[in-house]
Length: 126
Image (cartoon, rainbow, N blue to C red; front, side, top):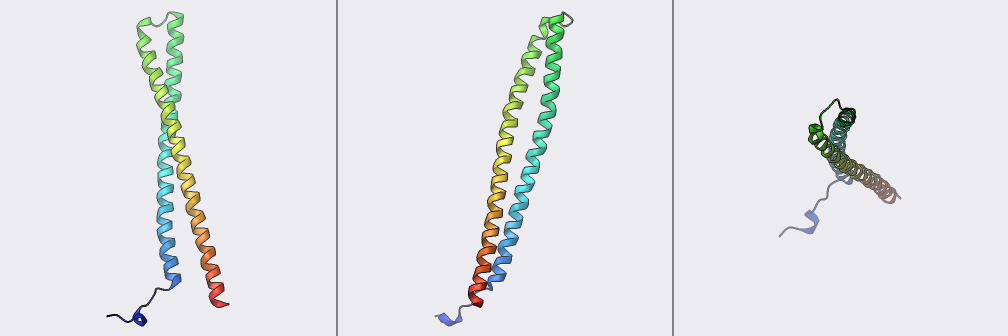
């Protein structure tokens, strides 16, 4: 049977460094995901603008009689694509907000932990 006096705990500073490394990896992951979301959103916004312009020109051409009314199915397809883009852009904006909130919460945890380890050192020294 092990003696209670044989138990050794780790140095609190070593624990803090382990925690900071873990939190740093998590922060980098949040940042990476945010970057991916922003890239997808930027690409969609470009396609959205392009599709919107094409649809507007096609509708104008149809109204002027320089494009056949048979192109109405193209306008419908572009309209659906535009609506899908709007929904996806809104979802990506929501996801990016969540990533920023998570990152902010992680920063608060790290700051709180730094405050607690600082006060623990003060108490231990006092």
